[in-house]
Image (tube, rainbow, N blue to C red):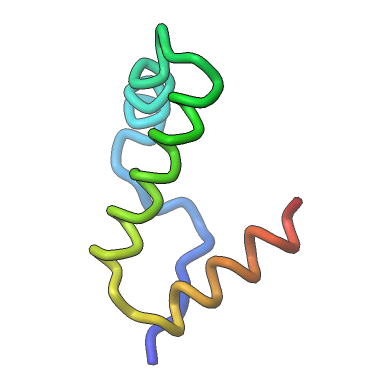
Length: 64
């Protein structure tokens, strides 16, 4: 079983954030929500580990 990484772990995090925000430019709220859903499912598929994904869901739920 893998553990979810919750500490900063993205090279060029500020650049990634800017790219993510830019991807939403010009989108409606519904289009932006759909983009987020597609991104989430793409990354979840890449991770592939159901336990890590369950940990991520719990962490996101607790953070909100």
